[in-house]
Image 1 (cartoon, rainbow, N blue to C red):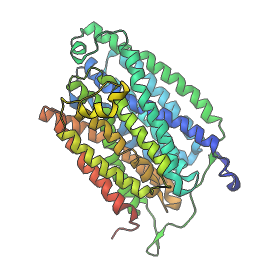
Image 2: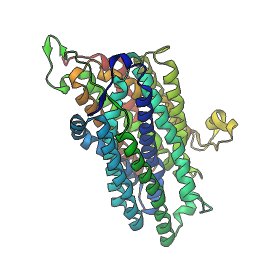
Image 3: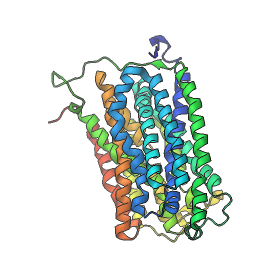
Image 4: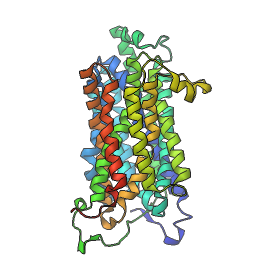
Length: 437
C-alpha cells in the first residue's frame, strides 16, 4: 500500500511526488505525440488513405474508453505506486510489439501495439490526474496540472524531430513525392527502422518501472465530504452533471487536440510541405506556450472557469481560420515565426498549429471543475473523465473520412467547431450544475 502523506507535511512533501509524476507526464507526451509523426509514416509504408491512416489514433485512444473503469478498480486494489508500475509494464509490452509489426510491415499489428500502449497509459492517466488535483489546494490545481502539461507538451515538441532524425536521416530527398515513389524493398527497409526507436522506448519504460515501484509516492485519499445535493445522498457517479458533462467536454477537447497534433503532418503533406514529418512540433510549441500562460496566470490573474471559456472562444476562431485561410500564402507564419529561422507553412496549416495554443488550458482547467465536491466518488469521476479521452479515437477518423469524401482536408476541419462550442457551454454553465433537473 502507498505510504500516507502527513497532513502537516503536505505543503513541503510534494516536491518528490510531483517530480515523479512529472517524469510520467513526459512519458505520456513522448508516447502520445509520436502518433502525429507515425500517421504519415505508416500511410507511406502501408499504402493507406486518410481514413485508414487515422486508425492510428482510434487504436490508441479507444484503449482509454475500454480500460478506464477496469483500471480504476485495479488502482483501488493495488494503490497508485503499484498501479503506475503495472501501467509501465503494459507499455513495455506494447513497445515490443512494434518489432514484429515493423518486420512484417503489418498495419493491424501496428494498431494492436498502439492499443496495448494506450492500455498502459490508461492506468497511468487514471492515477496521475486526480493525484495532481488532490496533492494541494483545489484553487491552484489547474496550475499544477499546467506544470504537468508543460512537461507533456515539451516531450511532444521533441519527439517528432527525434523521429524524423532517426527514420529519415539517410534518405536524402524526403519530399512527399519522393517517399511515394519508394520501391517495395525500400519501403520494407524504412519500416524496419522503427525497431530501434521502440526498443529504446521499451528499455526506458523498464527503467521507470523500478523507479516508480520503489519511489516515496504518498497515498492521497479524496476528501470525505458527503456527496449530497438537494438533501439526498447520491448513489452513482452519473448523478453528478458536472462530471458527465465534463467527460463529454473532454471527449470533444481530446478529439480536437489529437486532430491539431496528429493531422497537421498529413495536412502539410497533402499541401506539399517538405518538412511534414516535424509539423506536430509546431502544434506542441503552441500548446507549450498555452501551458506557460496557465502556470503564470491561474489563479492569480484568471480563474479556472475564465481560462476554460477563453480556450473555447480562441478555438472557435482558429477553426474558422483553418477552413477559410489560404493554403498557399505563408504570411501568417512569416509574421509569427519567420524571424526565428523555423521553416514557414501555409496559413491554413499555421491555424491548425494555433489550435494547440487555443485549447491548451482546457485539460488543466476542466479537471478541478469536474472533480469538485465528488468526495468518495472521486475515483469513479476520474475514470469517467479518462473515458472522455476516447474522443481521440473517434473524431480524427471522422476527419479522415470527411477529407476523403471532400477530396480536400481543409473543409473537414469544420468538424472541430461543435467541439469548441460544447466546451464553451461547459465553461459558462455545465460545470456549475450539481443536479439533473
